[in-house]
Amino acid sequence: MKLLLVYDSRHGSTQQYAEWMHTQMGGKLMFVKDVSKDDLAASDVLVFGGYVHAGKISIRNVIHKHWSIIENKPIVLFTTSGTPPTKTATIQAVFEDSFPLEIREKLAYFPLWGRIDKARWKLADRTLVRFGSWIEKDPDVKRGMVTDFDGVREEALQPLVKHIQSLLAAQETE
View: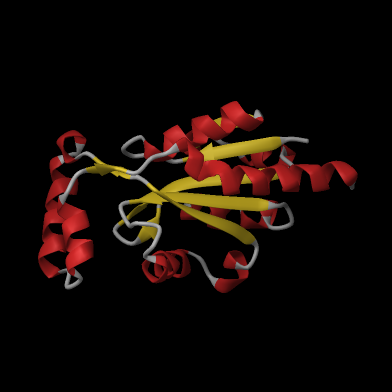
């Protein structure tokens, strides 16, 4: 079975999760800018990983652009963000804003917690988050926007890896 893991990472969280998955399951690991239509077409199971920035999933354009090639394959999407996994309504809203229903229905979606280390950010990112924190009304979200944290944990991948393994096993029996 050909597993393709495609990731887009800005601050390292998504890349870390993608590398851990690759170590656990094998397959081909590619940065989003290196993936081609041929790579997507040749794969049996696709895993896309992206980060959330300004309320949108970073890897959404690749999925939209190549939808006609991948729509009939098992597809898993994972995202990293500063939003705690317990904020399911916020996470779901980002997912819905990033993909139309016809695509969402075919994606197995796994949101994961990322990390914030503003010392490593560009000035534009720090400014955007600072501005967002001024207009945010939810005190928990506001605090999360201005406080560094590291929520990246390999054990958070267990449900995702289990799901991908079940997809791979199902592909082998076909």
